[in-house]
Length: 232
Image 1 (cartoon, rainbow, N blue to C red):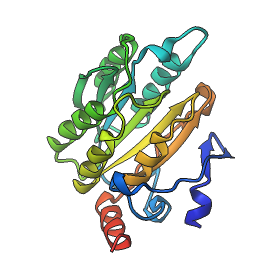
Image 2: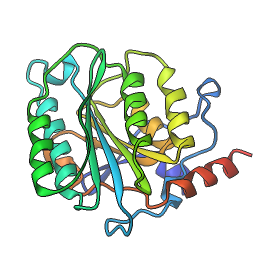
Image 3: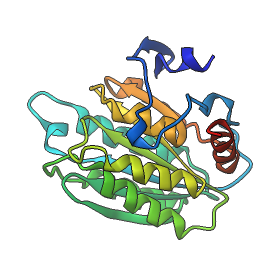
Image 4: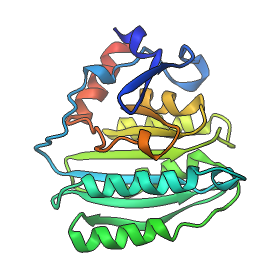
């Protein structure tokens, strides 16, 4: 059921409890989890434009932390999983966000270029979600791919309070879905963003917990319509 889905998160093939999610009236979030009703397939029939958004804040490489290495491995797994009809782009963020690689066809040659961009990512300072989501949103609006998805990887609480909820609402209004991956740390914001935007929330304590194949909803427009209907 939706209430049961709201209480667990995926860790590899396991599930563990997470705090109950109660939508806040000031966040523009209404209704419960809908993503389990969306069509999700690993054998997709339509091309995907995927933006990988990677946290490069200072905490990702703090003393003893492997989160930055895990994020890079996770991003490379996503790149490897995409077919040659798909497009992939890369955004890094800390205090500011920037496009490291614009959307490219996921050919073998371009995948090598994407992996080099991921490998060369450098640590910054803060953890500002809003600009990173906005930039991913803008990049995906340039694409004609029928399915558009963001995978957002982070290890920390957002530094920019609640502004990112507004951007999440704008993203789903444009039929773009978002999945989030929490790296070694539970952030209240990550499951809520995935909930708003019709994606999945994963928790990865290490590289072994990362999903091998990203689960991307086949019909983001269907999710938006279900969400609007559920909010009436």
